[in-house]
Amino acid sequence: MASIINGFQLIARLGRGGQATTYLALPAHHERGGQRSRHLLVQLGFRTGRISLRRAQRWGLGALKLASSATATSLYAEHTILAAPQMRHPHLVCLYRQRFPEALGQRNLGLRGAGAQQRVALALAYEPGQSLAQLLVRRQVPRDPAWAIKLAQQLADALSHLHRHGILHHDLHPANVLVQHASTNQPYVRLIDLGAAERLAAPRRYAVYGTPGYLAPERMGADPAPPSPLVDVYGLGKLLAALTAHTYPLPALRTLIEQATATDPAQRGRSIPHMACFQARLHELCTHSTTFPGMLECRL
Ligand SMILES: Nc1ncnc2c1ncn2[C@@H]1O[C@H](COP(=O)(O)OP(=O)(O)OP(=O)(O)O)[C@@H](O)[C@H]1O
Ligand SMILES: [Mg+2]
Image 1: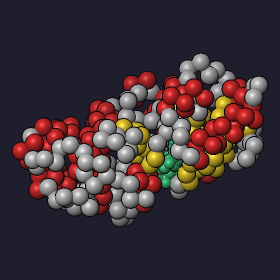
Image 2: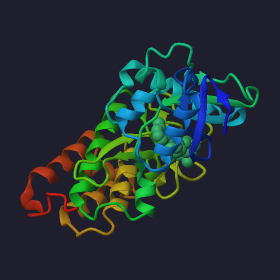
Image 3: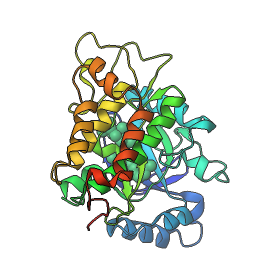
Image 4: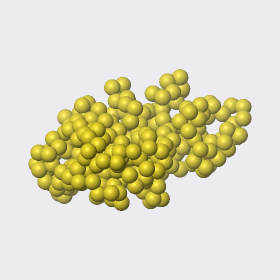
């Protein structure tokens, strides 16, 4: 693959969703002198899973999300949300330019180069690691509730941040969570894909995006309820359920998951009214070791 789009050379396909296809991308300006060898090095690193965050930063790697102009609206929405400086958060994906402010000439959104008429491109900073979806399929999720709780805590932190700024993620599912250091007891998470995000003050009027199995029931059907933070509470509950499906059944964790995934949003809201409360409950699970003695050290 040799196409240059918006000053990026596409290296490999990272994923394809309903709205867009995302590619690992190397900025073309990095490539002068040794262009081909750097390309091959990145490709090799990607294939063998050996791109660390330090390397990704040294090479200035991006994740270029391409959509056809017919489905570009969610890309524009994602760009608008991430472009706000207050959106920066250690567990949330960021725009390419925010990680590499010196990369003048690279545009975050828009398209120049091949197929400019048909497509729109969003340039994000590349986050190394595997998606939770990949880890689940390959059965590489540690069978330890403490690992899952750590992961959920970081996600709850990113979601609380979004909610404080009036944004719902609205599409929590394993492919939208990237994990670094997955095989250690210090997993590090980045929440990606704000393509389905909703603004609490101005929800989308005509379409509801989300993923079956993770989207809250009140948002489905012909007459969906208005979006509320409880939608992300449900999504995070479902994610936690998927991560702990094969672990030791801890009563306190079970209860938390049941409350977060209650079908009736009113009932859900009575137990976990907002994301900060979910965060506090997860924290409690970690600190009160008496809840599940001996289970707090990840056994890998
Ligand atoms: N910044 C990034 N760094 C590394 N990988 C990424 C990044 N952004 C996306 N990906 C990879 O590409 C895949 C698809 O990206 P994303 O979820 O943003 O696209 P999408 O088309 O909105 O997907 P869907 O509609 O299915 O949710 C992700 O699951 C992830 O593996
Ligand atoms: Mg996605």
